[in-house]
Amino acid sequence: MNRAAMPADSRLLQPPGVFTRWFGQGRIGLFSLSRETLARRHALPGSRWVQVMGTLVHYTDEGAPDAEPLLLIHGFGASLHTWQGLMPALTQRYRVLRVDLPPFGLTGPLRDAHRRIATMDVDAYRRFIDGFCDAVCLQRASVIGNSLGGLIAWDMAARHPGRVGKLVLIDAAGFPMQLPRYIALFNHAPVRWSAPWMLPEFVIRAATRDVYGDAARVDEATFRRYVDFFYAEGSREAVGRMVPKLDFDALDTGVLGGIRAPTLVLWGERDRWIPPAHAQAFAERIPGARLQRYAGLGHIPMEEDPQRVAADLLPFLDGR
Image (tube, rainbow, N blue to C red; front, side):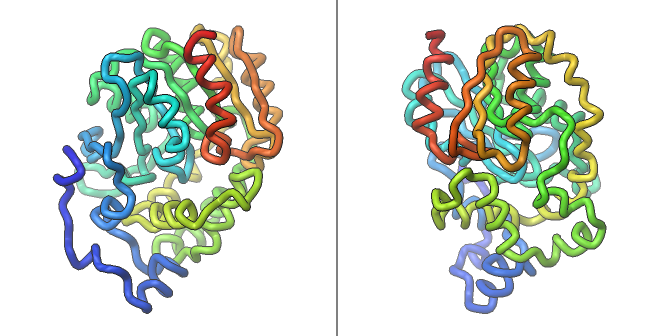
């Protein structure tokens, strides 16, 4: 399904009034943004939709169609837009697929047969990423994952060694850790109850600054995108259901030793969300893995400084 096929309600696409700007998506979050409004604001020229697990999933498929495919998987609270800075370099040489994980981006929450919001956990993400690859006929690809997407990527390489060519982990999750404070908020029942109805914008902005090594790099358009997607219809309720299920202590990281895909680990040394010590742990556990650290960059180095990351990523993908 292409962008034009997305249903639209013209009333939702009008510029917000003063009341809405202050009390709605602009400041407090008393209202949610419809998927149609979000598509109008944030869909890309290459946006596509495909059915996975009963939900319309947003993705892009760009670059050379006959070239080696890459699958890019974003992290918690982000969207496929986080890879935008890398796209000019990657699409010159590769077929590049990006996907909005549920409940984030333009995909939003998965829902059951009764339209109730599904709870995402590791098993649900396994079913989702396998279903997505099947839906877009992606038999084999090099996989690049950041944060939660990194967890999904290394788990995929361990479960489906024939499906993953090369593996790139960027500030990946997986080892036991304390949840970042802005995520851990949702472990408190009052926050889970109130967030779908009221979540101040300053909290989302603070969390966005926190994932950058240098908060001055975050421009207003980036802030607006993160805020809009967090205010998407159903997303805050889905996050409230998901966070209590994020139990990294229960993950079997012993499978890392069985990964045979050539692996590159990239890490921002100013990562405040996942301890930088985990970078070395991934590099030591995965046979032959190479590690590159970035002084001054934070949890999402490929968004914060894509040129710097591309300088290491492209030679690895090219086999140099």
